[in-house]
Image (cartoon, rainbow, N blue to C red; front, side, top):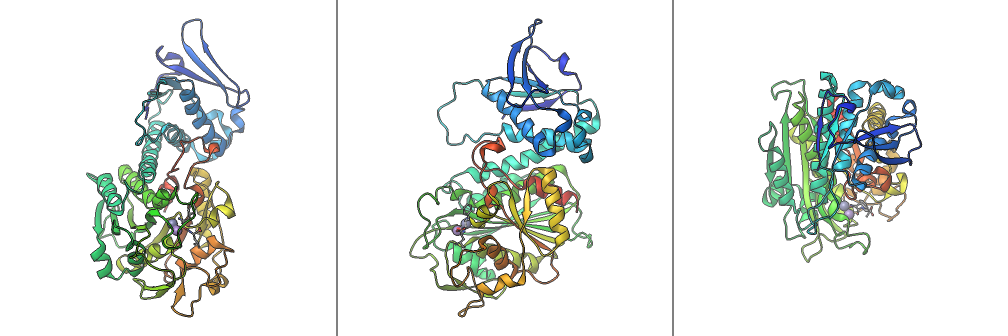
Length: 472
Ligand code: BES
Ligand code: MN
Ligand code: ZN
């Protein structure tokens, strides 16, 4: 990662070692690398009309700058962007502008090299200097952006590791390491504890693997534990460290990316890490049911019936619908042990979410329309786009089991409305009057070329979660 620093100096006053990024109003594909008469290197790039940039195109523009610097093998670049020129962005405010600038410089700089042993011969980008940041408020906003991006990049690091390197215990260790020396605490329940507590669904999913399941609890009482009116927001992240599908094994071509199936859990760690780093005066709890959905003689079978922590029995008709099982027990745990102001579960839950929305946005499901609208707006502002799907009562009928209280997929094996089916299953484990939203992040599990990010985990929806907590 390059060092990202700021200075009050103007771009025209930077030293010769920096290549100055000059944004012109040419079209976005235009660029020239030139040496000026006084010996400065300038990278002039088309950025379109400043006055026409929206939040979406602005984020992409910032990421393109980093991509261009990398592809031209520039080792140090300097840039300066003036908030007042981007008139369409005024509604978001100046703090948003500098925060977003920092976030996207950092997110675009990130690369995952853990498994690369052959060093690149190309020159690497080592430094990004942002000029014209004399105003203290702008600088604070910029630093906030860097902190949020760091939380996002922590999430990407955890998610990108192989299933072999990120077992349930490794995920617990990643949480312990992330929160070492912060105000947040981490408690980890092992397999015995999970059985003793009665988390029969988490146990059913994890019992087939050699690496036993864990239940990870992160507590951050930024507003104080005794302050009764500050009920915590509870973030619940799916922590399937590898999803083979279980005995209903996934076909080849659909399995190899399933080390990313703990992306929801990783986003909980990243988001709370940013919140603790920012010192937000909010109470936030993170819950991560962690398990490997593996194949062995000990694996849960299709047709097995398991008893959830809530007491409800579940007919496991399909072993690949495992995410909803582990989340159900975590939702119950949240309501047993805390008084949630809001529960947010984050999960790479269904391939059907990609069928519905493509790879552009995560799906949200909640019975609170106002919350849905708020999340859509925060998604637009933060860059972690989300779009609502319904959770009508009518969707419950296909999950009625004749053998148990409920089944984990439609009893007629229909794939219609698969994303909503996941949310509907979870809704059975949410008590009336407990505010809750389900975020199916499967569409955003991996980056796509138009994101202008490194391949692999996107780290979503850390930016959205931080904003949601900030504004609640
Ligand atoms: N982890 C997968 C969902 C997934 C698929 C995420 C592709 C990202 C990309 C989940 O556990 C799963 O296997 N879901 C099944 C559900 C089905 C059996 C009802 C699916 O989507 O096929
Ligand atoms: Mn699965
Ligand atoms: Zn899964």
